[in-house]
Image (cartoon, rainbow, N blue to C red; front, side, top):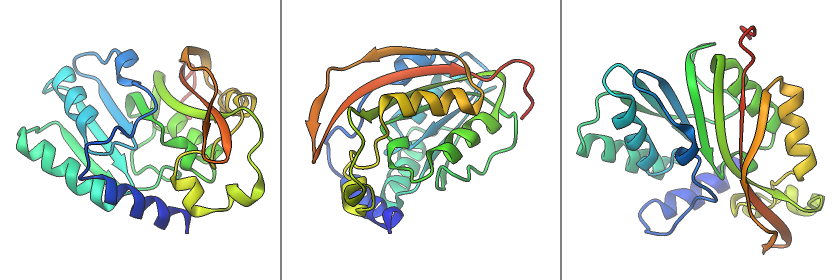
Length: 213
């Protein structure tokens, strides 16, 4: 139900000019030539194209999204710019179809809050990152626990607020997953959204160099 609501909402937004992101994770990712990058919730594919141009022909970029409309838009974009070192994949974030220890950097903008099982998403990010690989994620958190009636409302979750964890829960999940060097790069003041008060932040962290899984 939640996945269907997200697919419907973001497919309808794929042809609009509205800004869908709550941050600019790519601005802090510092991808290097030859690196393998993943954009979770890649949307229209703009960041996929930017990453692909930066990592060059010896690097590669995967855009992961669940929305059929966004997938079609992103594929059209990489074809328009004749991008050969990128691929758009339709998938949920709890089961990312990439190999273990295969990615240098993961970015995401205002996407993980939609996931019903956020621990599973972060475990997948940890799994696909190479030892010493890094993530840069912009997302929202709730200043207070979201009421259950909204957490279970597919439309409210799709509107990018009802699925938000609290700040403490968000950071605890990162630590429990096994990431190190967790650092908040930017953070907004709280603001009203839907039936909640939320804040946006960009957080980074690394997979320990001695961790294979």
